[in-house]
Length: 558
Ligand SMILES: Nc1nc2c(ncn2[C@@H]2O[C@H](COP(=O)(O)OP(=O)(O)OP(=O)(O)O)[C@@H](O)[C@H]2O)c(=O)[nH]1
Image (cartoon, rainbow, N blue to C red):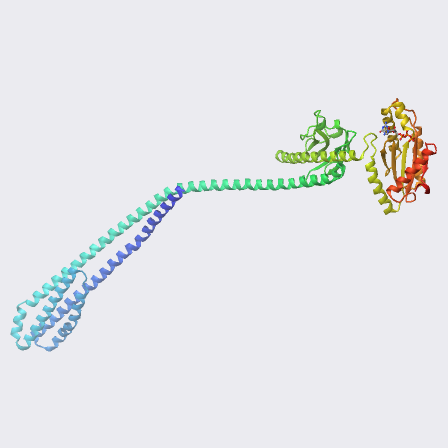
């Protein structure tokens, strides 16, 4: 700022000096012109004075000739000279400007008039008396006047020459002064410019530094804005992925969605999502990108990322020996254990990381952020699954409970109506189970219930729904199975129970039997209650008829 003021001030001074130097030739030219005008004026004045002397000389010659000859012919030129003299004298008076020149001009003019008057007087006397005229001429008055006139004209001429010389001398002095001033002005301006130059250079340097700093800052801000926009997009995608996982009915159902979001979140990278199975192995449920296919299944101890510590380590780990023992190229991959509430729920493998360390760090940071959020969401999904399972499962046998049966029966009935397909219901009750409890104890009774549940599970087909209805009573729903086929299958189950070892661990009965009542929609019951009622009545009849048998509901059971 201070520099800027200095530069402006110096620039103004330099400008003024240069303007002055530029004005000098004009000023000098004006002096030259004035001198030239004065010289011309004085030259003209000198010509006038000489002409005036010539006229008087002509007039005097004519006068002499007339005095000597008396002939009027000689008076003609005197008359002409006389007529020309008056305007010539007026021009001489007008042609002088300065005070002294004017006085001299007036004196000369006056003397010329006196000379003219003297000539006129001699001519007038000659007309009367020649001798008197000759006497007048002889008196030399006219010659004195002419001498005086010549002297004055010479003086005036000398004065004019002197003035001219003085003017020329002044002009030379002015010219020298002007040259000196011009040179001084140029030197001064050069000096000032010399002083100005370092300041300007410094200012330019400072400005250039400022511009560079601003450019660097702008680049930083641009990069920060880009980064913020990228992070914002990533956060939005992560949030959307988490919402999708939350909305999915199970973690396995969520996995393909995760794969799709991961492909958008980490463009250019490939990867796989593994979920931990109940048997403790990792199973691949999603894969994205164009990278190499990762193993479909992986044992926990095959992964260096997982076996490194006793507890799963959620920090990213670059594999160096490949998964599942397979050879893998070094680097370019990170395996991220998905740990939620200190429990491993799965693993995310990201492949194709950049070889540029900075870019790789960013990719790993993003993969780590995705993995952390995903682990929590998958953990929550598993928790929800577990809660949901617990709410519909019977804790003793692991079969569905009565609540689930009620819901399923209503749903399956609706489906059967839609499809016009049969739906069979089996109600199974263990025979004399009270005696089992009484003889072997309640724990042995529980063991028998679990063994029978296993047998039912083994007997069931895909689509069958087996539930513990309560106590020692089980129900099985057989969609798209007509009553005859259901009766056949029920008898197979009865026989399987009859032939199984009821207490494999010992301490209980060796054998148990069960009675089964069978009913089917729509023949034995149109609604859920009617169908159950019919099957239960058939079971009652089986008990009455001696147990360990299958009874199909008939018209009397409706
Ligand atoms: N150990 C055990 N016993 C149970 C459980 N639920 C019900 N029971 C018993 O099952 C027995 C059912 O007996 P009952 O209803 O008299 O029938 P039953 O002895 O099987 O006779 P029938 O059905 O007529 O063949 C009772 O002794 C109950 O205490 C259970 O969860 N565990």
